[in-house]
Image (tube, rainbow, N blue to C red):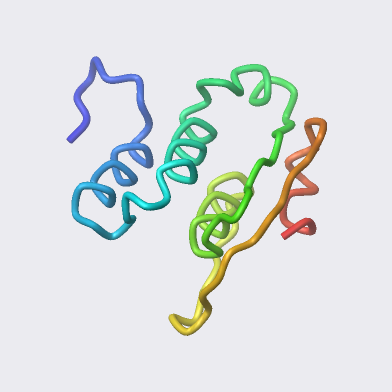
Length: 104
């Protein structure tokens, strides 16, 4: 899916594929855009350098937030398929990546 000239990481391509296949519904485009931007490092170029991230999950699916936290922290999570709902996690200022897992 990605070629040598494509700077986007493979996760962005997986998110795009999930949207196209209907796994991620179009009713939640804000979440998809935020997660893709966060993980692609587009608005957070300095975040990678300083090892901080700004969290902005508003009415986000728990599954999408857990995936994002997994990518940020490098930790693995197992979610029971019965776990459904939305979550709000907003940080006014950048937080260290080391605090993302305890925040979840």
